[in-house]
Length: 307
Image (cartoon, rainbow, N blue to C red; front, top):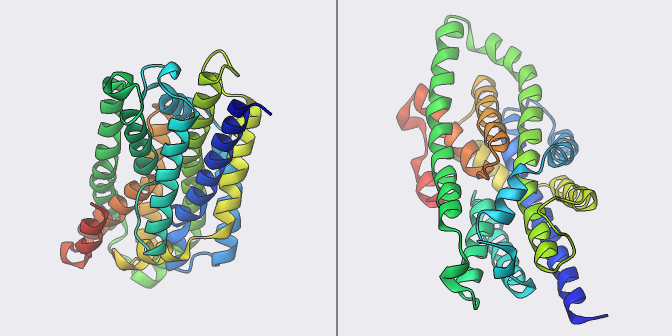
C-alpha cells in the first residue's frame, strides 16, 4: 500500500478517535444538568444523548465546510502530516482536561491544533486564512458570553412568571420538561461538534485528491456520527460532576433554562455554519442563570479555570 494511502488512513483513524473522545468529553454538555437535578437516570441520559448526538451529526455539513475551508487558504496548504499533528495535539489536550475534570473546549483544541500545525509546516503563515480564522475565533469568544446573557434573561423571565409558586411544585413540573430540553441539547451538540472531525477528514480527502470539492461523502458523516455516539455512550463523569454541581447548585427550573438556552445558541450557530464550544456555551448559560438568582452563588473559580 503506498505511503500516502497509509497516512490518509491514519488521519481518518485519528479524526474518528478525536470524535470518540469528544463524545465522552462533552457528554456533560447534554446531560449534566438533567442528571444533577435527578430529572433522568444517568444511564438513560447517556443512551438518549448518544442517539441524539448521532442524529444531530447527520443533520448538516455547514460547520464541517467552515472547518475545512475557513482555517487554511486552500487544501494545497496542508497534507496528511499537518492534519496528523493537529489531531494529536487536540486529542492529547482533551485527555488531559478530561483527566482533571476541566470543562475545556474540544473545538478550541482542534482549531488551535490545526493553526499551530500549519504555522510549523512549509506553508507557514501564508497557508492560513486569517479572515476565516477571525470569524471562527469571534464565534468561539462571543458564544459563551451570549449564552451567559441570554441565560440570565431567560431565568429572570421564568422568575417573573413562576416566582409566586411554591419551589417544590414548580421543580416537579420542570423536572419532566428537562427531559425534552436535554434531548434538544444533545441533538444540537451533535449538529455542531461532530462536524469538526467531518471537516478535517474532508480536508484530508481534498488535499489528497480523493474528492474534488468540499462536498462531504455520506460514509464520512456516518463514521463520525457513529464514533461520537459511541464516545457519548462511554460517559464523561468527571466533567459531568464539574458542570452539574461545581458552577452553581441547580434546581430543575435552572436546569431547564440552561438546556433550553444552550440548545438555542448552539443550534443557531450550526445554522450559521459557525463552530462553537458546546462546553463553554453550557457553562456560560449556567453562570448566567445562577447570576439571575444570586451572583454570589456562582462559583466563578470554575470560569477562571476554563479561561
